[in-house]
Length: 392
Image (cartoon, rainbow, N blue to C red; front, top):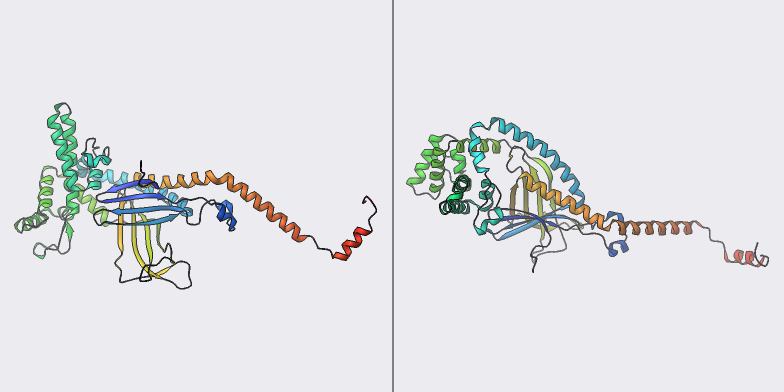
């Protein structure tokens, strides 16, 4: 059986985008020792873990690495953030009030999904809708509803899951749908349907009417959300809280931003080398998806006389990748990275320690030999000829 991605140690998925954590935590070998590398470094100079993005909608991908020696720092920073996230959860729970009903509903775990969504089984309705997008989420809700009709015994539970899946689908659809500025409706900048309906409802209805009358592509998202809010007012409270949180979010640095040039000797036909910028940030106020991994991939001209570094080509449009992760998704990734580093180091520690002791002994003997004065040849000959038979 073919293993397509043997270096993957953790993954997270959203609509069209997969983020895979891969390992390049390679141990030292005989060649490294023969070239003078200290065996107690244990790992190759390039050792680390990679964050590999794949966007099927854009048919593009990109990857960036976190160095092995930076993994402990990333883990400690992550642990520090968990305290802030949990405190924010407590604060938001105490003031969520009206949003609580909708939040509880979209937090329902879904156990029955179509075959092409099976990776989402057991996740919450909102996690599934964010992972697969609103179109598939609507389909999942319809399947649950149909299952409830076919199986009266499980109808109550399936209908509850269908309601949750539908609510999550409508909310995600509203987040996905962007409306360009409409001066006539006092919409001065591009906004999503979710943003529009999280504010003044009269203004939102006015904008919705303009969308409907002009047969705007965003009409369905606006109508679906308006109907849902009428039936479940807590949905608007949830949208308002999300908007307030997003407007006041201040990030904490977990890693980077670090600009890297993996191989300045590897050039394209125009003399440019690959370069990227990786950063990981935490937004404790966003208790649903507090950790953000961002990657920028572009190219640049290598800097003459330097082993690393390049000047970015401003005429090249960079590729950007981003994923917001739940606390458990990020903690799983960094914990796996930390353990993988330790396990590789443990596997070679005895061998490298033996190599270290041998090299240390060899160095000592060389120093001792270099410290012994070298007598002249005639003096040595005289000492030998003057000795009594049998020595001293």
